[in-house]
Length: 140
Image (cartoon, rainbow, N blue to C red; front, side):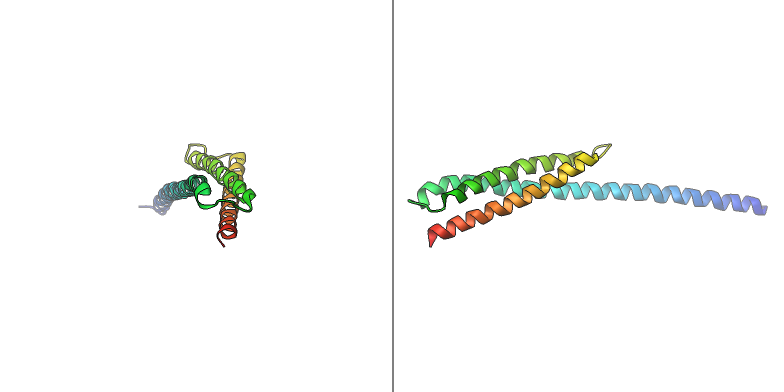
């Protein structure tokens, strides 16, 4: 075997190894994305479930627990905040699912996803805070 043939075989082997490495890396990235989307959608479902439960609990117990409640505006802020959390959760859920599509998300889609997620977190935290403040003010 000549030196040129050996070099050609080595180069072919190196190219084949690069292709295998690239396809393995692509599959690992795809698996990572799918796992990330699965975790994100589960997280969003939990936030939405807690928000929905809080709305029902608040509406149900408001009349029975508090005869003459103070700081009623906090109840309104909580209800609107929990509803906003649910709406933003639906938007974020949809954009997370779109990430697994063949084209992924556009830049606008990524911006919508990030904005909806931030609003979801913020409205949830504000809603819980208002609910706690309302409860503390009227129970003590």
